[in-house]
Image (cartoon, rainbow, N blue to C red; front, top):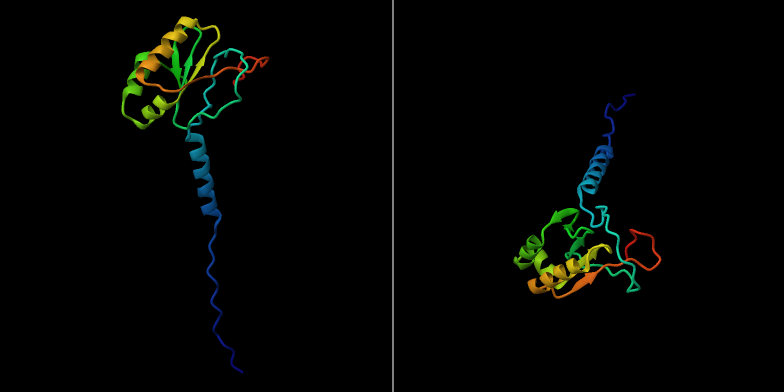
Length: 145
């Protein structure tokens, strides 16, 4: 009796492990290199006031910090008021967003004259809406509202 020498063709299979490894590495890479809005720690001691609940800032709005010594910072980088005004006057998309809404976090020990000077300059630059961030009454220092 003759036996068939033909063998069944084996099914093609893919090993998905390398592809999963690559996808995982991409996820880790993009997570570590992305910029998160509140990732930069700040040392601004906000004034304590009763106010509205924490409102979400517009995604493209500019957030400024007015520190105790009167210096301005944006995204953890110290900037001058003239640099902010120049940026707001430019025609970029973030400048249009800043003119429509700007978030100011002023230290409670900052002289009120500095706060007035900054807000006046921002209003003259065309900022239509300015949000001033405060901490809730009774909140520990550093908790923002």
